[in-house]
Amino acid sequence: MNPKVSVIVPIYGVEVFIRRCVESLCSQDYDNYELVFVDDGSPDSSVDILAEVLDAHPEVRAKSLIIRQKNAGLPKARMAGLGVATGDYVIHVDSDDWVEPDYLSQLVGKAVEEGADVVYCDYFKEYDCKPAKIEVENDFTPADGPSAVKAVNNGVIRAYMWNKLVRRELYDLDNMIVPIRGYHEDIVFQTQILCHAAKCVHLRKPLYHYRRRRSGSLTRASLVNSRHYSAENMLYLYERLPKDREPVTSSGIYILLRAGWYCCVTLWLKKLAEHPDVVDILAGMDYVHGCRVPIAKQAYTKLCCKLIKLFSKR
Image (cartoon, rainbow, N blue to C red; front, side):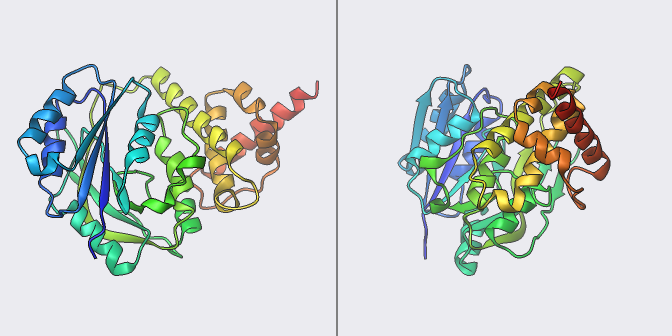
């Protein structure tokens, strides 16, 4: 078997990094793939560099597509790429990262060998000023969709799009809930994608180089904003998911706990108050042990939600 893989690469402001990314994709030892580049209104020369590299690899250019759109953010760039993908499997690559030469062959080989809908691999975390670190993903059982969604939302495995080869049929594009923010958008996507999987397999090999760019110290304002963006995404996702089946049945409380904690720790209680059903759930919940949000943070979130309910009655 030689299934086709669609590799989706959003591009925005990566002129310093994109050459290495594209060169690594052009050097794959697996032949049956297509590259879908989405220019999200990049203001620099990223796309010119992309074209230059592809011109040097005519055999890869022949199976590449460049989509151009006004800047709409990472989630919509991903959706634009998915809309034209024709592969049996789909994987995403960030344009400031790069991959090993056997990135696709190893993932596809494992998928075929195991009959898997999803294969996720380990990765290298790359730093500017210190050696790379190999990050090994965890396993989870049973290896099915609901367990995968729970593992992602509970922090057992990362939600990254770029270390997961996914059977294309798992993407329900007509009903996909698109994140409204770029922060933790991968959790929103993976929650919807993985729940449809029959089998998920861990490939115990680092194949992806994830670049950790240092853009200066994280200010309190940026930390607050990131938590607000994440909370918005989680609340947006929960409100739109069907409440009588997956993924809410396995992971709804984990989605809400993260959203609630981020709102409460930043005192963004007015956002929670806009979702009275969520407030009711968090105010009356039993504590969830082994959760990504520790018990102490759950207790604080529960207290805040009780106070919201109390003051809303006045």
